[in-house]
Image (tube, rainbow, N blue to C red; front, side, top):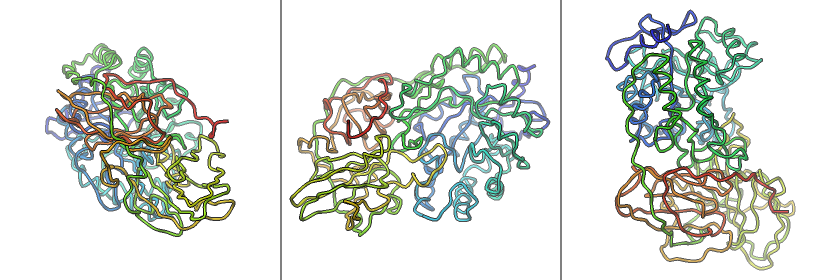
Length: 609
C-alpha cells in the first residue's frame, strides 16, 4: 500500500496543475493520497553554485520534497533594502527543486531559529528600542508584512495553488502557543498572497494538548519518531494529517560544548534507519532536519544564550559539509528503494576534494594600528545597532591624560570584550567566563588610552531575548562606580576588513595577547573543496579572496574551516586572518580533505584562578 501511495506522487516538473489538499487525516495530490518525504536544505548555508547538486542528490536519495528555511536577515540586511541575488535567490532555488522533480515545504519564519543569527531576525530591528519582537506589536508586524510581501513577489506564483511546487508554508517556529500574535501573523501571510496550506510546528508536549487551534492552520510536530508525541499530534490535528516537520539527523553544537562538536551528537546510521522505518510503517509525512546542513559562513551563526553556535553546520547529515554522499545517505536510499519500490535517479558524483601544502601567513599588524578615523564621537556609548551595524566588532576608545586607576566595570558589555591600555590586554570579559570577568582593577600612572573591543559572537537564536541581543556596550562603563563619558567609537562590521581597516604589508610582532591582523597568500594549481586546518591558531576569523569563511576557536571542537572551490582562484589566493587571542603557535596553515575536531574545552572562570 505504501509503495503505491508514494509512487502516485506526480512530478512537479511536468508543467501541469496538481491540486493539493490536507484533510481527512491525509495529504492528497490530484485527489490521491501522498506521503511527503522531505529533507531540509538551507540555501544561505550552501554556495548557490552548488544548489542544484544538493537538490539532485535529494532526489537521488529517494526524497519527493525539500524543506527550505529562509532567513529574513539575509533577505533584508538593511531596513527596506531587499536582496534576492546569489545566495538569496529563493526563486531560483524553488524552481530548481521543481525542475528536478521535487516538491517544496517553505519555512520563511519570520522567526526560524535554525541556529542562525538572531533566529533569522534582522539586527536592525533592535535599533528601534521600543519594538516588541515576536508579538503583535504594530511596528514589528509592519516590518513582518514588508518582508512577507517582498518574499511573495518573488515566489507567490510558485505555490501549488498556482501550478508551482510549494505545498506547505510554515509560520513562525516552535512558538509553543496559539495567541493573537499568531493570528495576526496568519493574516499577514494571507494578505501578502500566500494561499497554499499554512502550518506551525512545535515540539509538542503536555501544554500542546491544552491549546485551542487556529482555524485553517495545520499543526506539525518536531521530534518524531516518538510514540507519545505522535499520539498527542493526532489528538490536536483536527482532521489534518500528522506532519513530522523535523526528524533529526543530529544536533547542533556550540563553542566550548563538552559533548564533542558537530558530530558529537550524531545519530548513528542504524538508529536513523530504525527511526525512518518507524515513520514509514505508520504512513507518516516527515522532513529530515537536515538533509544537508552546510556552513555558518561569515558571522551568520546564532547562539544558545551566550554560547555561540559553531561555524560548521555539518549536522552529520546524509550529505556532508563539502557535498559528499555519506553512509547515512546510502543506507536511507537503499531503505527507500526496498520499502517504497521506487527507482530514484543515479547519485550525482561527489565534488573534487583537494589538499593544500602548508603555507605561512607572513604579514602581521596589531589591529589597533589598522584603525582609520572613528565612526562616532559621543559622550555616551552606543550599541552596534544604533550605528546600523549588524555583525563584526565595535571598539570604544577613551584617553586618560593623568592615567587610570581603580576598578573598571563593563556592566552590560555584549558580548566577548577585550580591554586594552595602550594596546596591551588587561582583561577579557565574557559571560561564560563568569560575572567577575566584567570587573578588573586598573593601575596605569601616566597618560594612556583605554580601548574596549567588543566582538559579536552571534545573537541568541534559541528563542528571542532582546535584552541580550544588542551588541556592544549597552551602558557606560564605570571606574570605581563613576560613569565614564567621552568616547571615540569605531564601527568594524568586517564583512570585508579591507573596507574598514588600513592593511599594511610590512611584518611586525604583535603585542602578547593583543588582537592582530595577519595577511598573506597561497597558490593553487587546481581548485577543489577543502578545509583549512586552523589548529595552530587561537580565536578569530578568516577571509579568503574577500569571502568570510567564519569563526575559529581553540576551545573546540571545530578546528577547521570550509573553503568552497567557487571562492578559490587557480593561482594566487589572498588570505586575511583576524587573531584575537595573541600570536598563534605557528602562522602555518594547510588544506585538508576532512573536518577536524578536537575535544571541546568547557569555558572556565576568567581570569584563571
